[in-house]
Amino acid sequence: MIENLARKRVAINSILSKSLYDKNKTVPLLFYHPNLVKPGIGRFQNFKTYLDTSCVETTDPIDYSFQISYDGRPSRANMQPSENTVWTARMKSSFKVLGITTNDKIIIKKCVLSTGFLGISESSCLCSPFIYSLFISKPFRILKDLNSTGATMESINNKDFLEIKVPFLSSTEMEDYRIKYMPLLLELSSLREEEIRLAKIKESLLAKYFNH
Image (tube, rainbow, N blue to C red; front, side):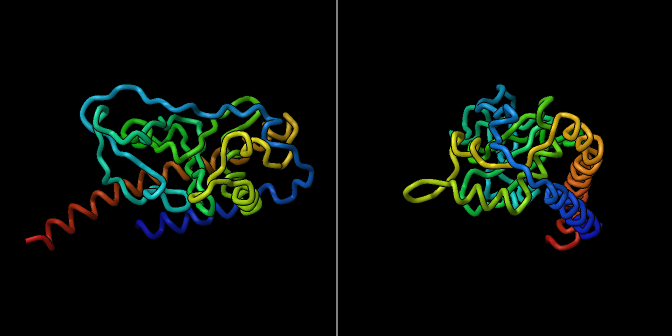
């Protein structure tokens, strides 16, 4: 069942990643007045799962084991995932993207992200599926890498990130894009929630029958 979910995810990502390839006119990302998610999380009780960039592989978390408290968390554990936000790793050559929707109940309620992620909130100028499709597309990832800087671990800063050339969509086209592709982004979130549930069942069964 987990493998079937993974295959569905790959198919959906393939559709989304290619959905902007026919858009030849480009503008700087700044043209859309993107709302960058600012660092900061609300105080919480007990523990939450910390997802740094190493916990994410391509478009999904693979490791939920890093538990943190509010006062005992790493300094980089300071980004709050919320619905209708899309995140990409800042580091060069790092394909790690998360599209968070209303269906991501677990991540929204129980997880904290690293400042190694850069997030954009959906707005009237930028719909979530467009941001997500952009972030996972190969042309965008190449430009992100080319604009990364740093002496040792190269990464993209906000200024250079906003200057990256991206496909131009009119306001009407953007709304049409949202209507057409938002169901796919919601489906990806639902698949992720189901994968988390099945992984817990698998873990409990392995512990029951193979741990002595």
